[in-house]
Image (cartoon, rainbow, N blue to C red; front, top):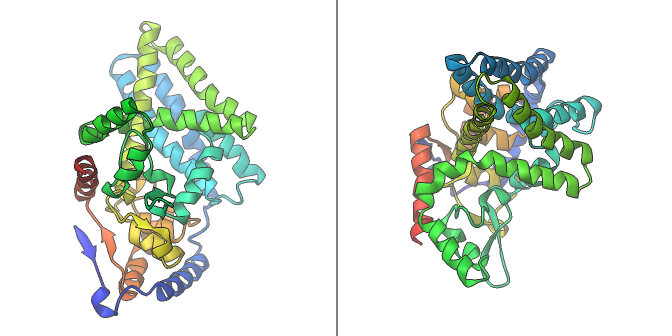
Length: 359
């Protein structure tokens, strides 16, 4: 574990100084080309987007160990494709309404199963107010950041117990919500696995509600075509292909959700009115996990989550290059730079869930 704090160097966190330092680092990083996604990287992402699922379905058709390898490859493909959609939605390939990013987002909707309209709607709010809440008229801490609100399935922090309890407006709901909360540590990993199904449904519902018909149809087509191809290509009965496809979805959802929860869960839940600007909000609610070639690949660079929140439009392949400078700036401005090992980060997550379950 590395939890570095520099509050002893100044009288307390200096939000204005942090904002100035981050602006300076952003200018330096832009001069070095860190915000640019090279044409070669774009080409590689396109080949990966189409080639990996094609390989996975081919391996399914061979049966046996080859089909199992295809299941693993397809499961890994889903978070990788989600990272690409994340890049595009963050305007890293140019403004997302331009022709190329718009085409790529539609390709991601087809090959991923969830679309940009829902993602942008929730994710930009998350980036503006990570782990942030507002105080309701009744004095209840109410999430602004939708990523910390999973009523009734998970109460992410004990500070949100009262908010979640108020969401149950009938006796049976209160009983069910309480039972779920009490068991949420045991249910946590199974719930992570079904995250993709929830995200896809929300994408489809949001796309049609917002009259983004093409996006909605492409998200639906992901499931229809995927199940159809799996049933046709499997050497066994059609249901074995359907099981293979759904299992890959479960694996992909688990990996992606696992990556996401390590970045903010167990960090401070706060009243947004007490925060001191954009960079202060990022610093107090975001953590990093280890960086290596493998972890950078598996997490899509989002293990450098602090840097991603400080510089959200920076190409993710360059985020790790900013760790040392960001750490130095945060410490010198009186902030903690939280960097935990994967096991320690998960312990922090489970600790927060356990505390909420017992509250």
